[in-house]
Image 1 (cartoon, rainbow, N blue to C red):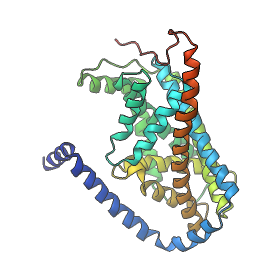
Image 2 (image 1 turned 180 degrees about the vertical axis):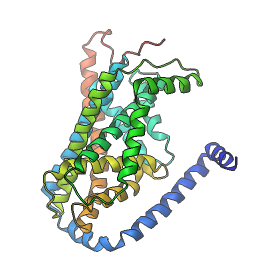
Image 3 (image 1 turned 120 degrees about the vertical axis):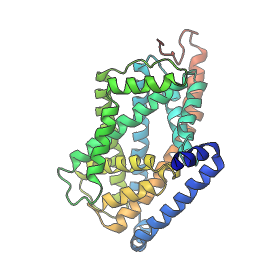
Image 4 (image 1 turned 90 degrees about the vertical axis):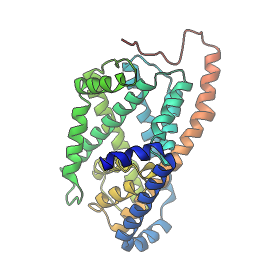
Length: 331
């Protein structure tokens, strides 16, 4: 009862909630820095000698991950009868990614909903549900990639069993019947109609698709390790894709950390010790954060200044019937 009262108070007082989250973040970062303090000297040396060409190639791989990942968002919406252009999908995706850096935790879905509303998709419930499907499928695919890579990567020191259990639980929740029943019950409390069901074939295809995106992400981390003087085998790319996925999952669960700051890095650092030295692991982890943030900002600018302008020019010559978004049929 006392816990429920505290939770209710935090929801009512945004400033207090944010202050508590920042305090938890400060404590977490302090403990993390203390735990890996011995690796900073080696990491500093590796960073000072980093290969700029490989750094650029790593950023290109990270950008490729985002540019491909957006296609999954478009497919989920299309299965529910909402068709949007690639520039719209990229803009909404990146805006929500950048919103992760704002303390509070609610800004990521809010930013996606606002971006989609500006594009003509006004069904906030459908957009939010699609985000849950996207995040869930990506997480399950990442866990699968990580699990498969353990067949040839030994000495992994991390919460492997909890990660596997998490993947199984999310996969069960994403089952079409389970997800549809839970989402419908939840949305009806807020006055929304039930969502159209997701096809099992769509979910299966997207699971394979998102697994491929994690391999692209793993290529970026592999290049970062190479840039700081490490020499991981090409076969570790799949493992590093799984490491990236675990880092992303931890970042979401660490609600108190904007964009999972520190939590993502701690998880990735610990897992990468299975294939490289502590200094190289820390250097690549820090560079990964820089690369992710830089790429997200650049893709946002690219989507707003280039793709959206091109889309507007193309739409001027199109007929009114060619709308960029079609609301899903509601029951």
